[in-house]
Amino acid sequence: MMSKLPLARALALLIPVALLGGAYVSQYVGGLHPCEMCWWQRYPHMAAIALALLAFAAKGNPRTSAMFTTLAAIAIAISGAIGLFHAGVEYGWWEGLTACSTSPTGGNAADILTQIMATPITRCDVAPWSLLGISLAGYNGLLSVGGALAILALLGRKGRNA
Image (cartoon, rainbow, N blue to C red):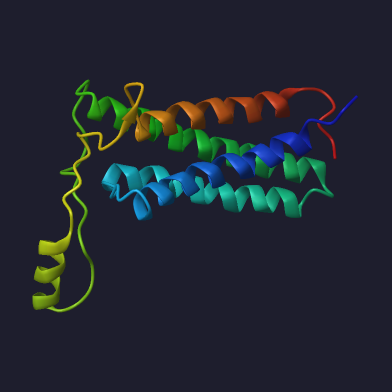
């Protein structure tokens, strides 16, 4: 029987790399500055990448590799849950947890004031972009939760060794 662990491991790396890459392209190429909740979605993807790399490093030990792949899937799902919550804030279904604006860091008082004045205000309750009525947070939620479920389904199947 064909092993499912290599595919699960690959998805555990590719999904957060693609979604995090898309977030950075949106920010640095598209000019869509992230709000605080956008950043919250990025951190679990960063953790998932590290965990997936550990899964690849441990591929000689299927049990350890599967454990790191599972942890990566959980991190991806957490990002997805945050994304779905954020999308609900954007759609006005519920209130967010913060004031949701980006803030500069470092420097003296004059520099900080200059940075504050130059920093674009990014609100968590306003979707700066959408496609087919779904915001970036919504797409992250859907793709992350779906991807995490796919990874976990692959890991749950028989013949997951190697």
